[in-house]
Image (cartoon, one colour):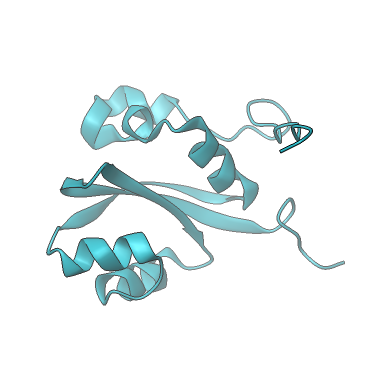
Length: 116
């Protein structure tokens, strides 16, 4: 059976920018190999936001990772719009207790809204 958005496991990562880029202070992404993806981002490849951050000369660091979680965990974190609260650089070690993936309990796919 082929892996899907709901079953494929990846590492999800949170970048913390050294200074804000427009409204953005963080970037959440996912990859099978976070270090390879980081190398792509450092060279300005990958997402448009990360390319713009690199071009602007703004530094960033990996603030946090979630290892071997379903790919949809990234989408859930995006929807929560909670990057500062799950970033240990912004919120201290208490952030490590937030955004945790617990199978079948803490994160469930959001119901689709009709008419959107």
